[in-house]
Image 1 (tube, rainbow, N blue to C red):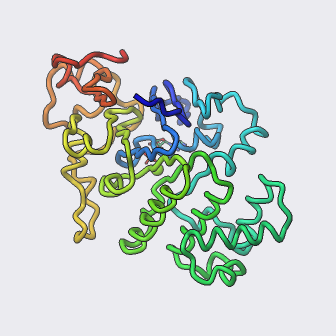
Image 2 (image 1 turned 60 degrees about the vertical axis):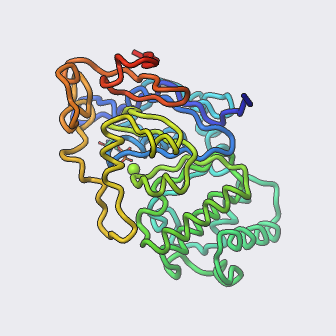
Length: 334
Ligand SMILES: Nc1ncnc2c1ncn2[C@@H]1O[C@H](COP(=O)(O)OP(=O)(O)O)[C@@H](O)[C@H]1O
Ligand SMILES: [Mg+2]
């Protein structure tokens, strides 16, 4: 077996938010890793804790009301949670960068596209202005922006949503980060543009050795983009496996529910939310499985005992009592 180094190792991460005097764990003891060059999908319905997890990696949890209450986030072997803000600023945009769902809110409307890419380059690199300009235009070209010399001088409002997202990817990749976190990068875009952006990201993945954490609620996107997947539910990891197994041998009833609701390419409506019921608010399920109320296969013990993460096979884990008695269903946490 070849040993591939992990770029990111998250262990027992718990993130709390205070609301109305009470502190609730919106991310509750999650662990996962991302290997060098790998694209890890993080999936789950809205409110599962995906964005909060990615913000914690960037050191951007709004505090208060939020705080990392437990765990470690090791990036290349160093715990980012020990970094001071000044050190994190060197990591952000340089070694780890992030692209968000809505590019308009992350681009500054009063500066040109060129200035905004230059800024990232000049912040992290020894580079004069003309070298930065050349590199910026090169980046715009790389992400498939036509007439990059002209777009360089444009303001964000002059570009379409798809072009703005390309610019965000250019900014995200400008410093050749080791890890790119993409939080629903195509959700706000229409289907055609979405396909173009995904093609672009797949292309970039082949050309660079950047690891990608790809957050999405769309399993169709996972099938196209990812090597491995973590399924999150109500702040916990409920299943983790490689992409082939996710589609051919999924175990958790929640994963099955998500798979049953993949929108077909021809359908405009998002059918992901067709699993009956809703994700419980963090902290409202005191005992038992957090998915029990929505589960087709629920058993009495699901309401009384927290299911542990069980090993299905090497690299495949699932948090469900259905598999507790099965051979190989060894408990890997408690
Ligand atoms: N700034 C905040 N203040 C209070 N609660 C928050 C804040 N941001 C997120 N949360 C809580 O954390 C939970 C997870 O949110 P989030 O990570 O954005 O979910 P996802 O990205 O999976 O849709 C939400 O249910 C929300 O209640
Ligand atoms: Mg989110």
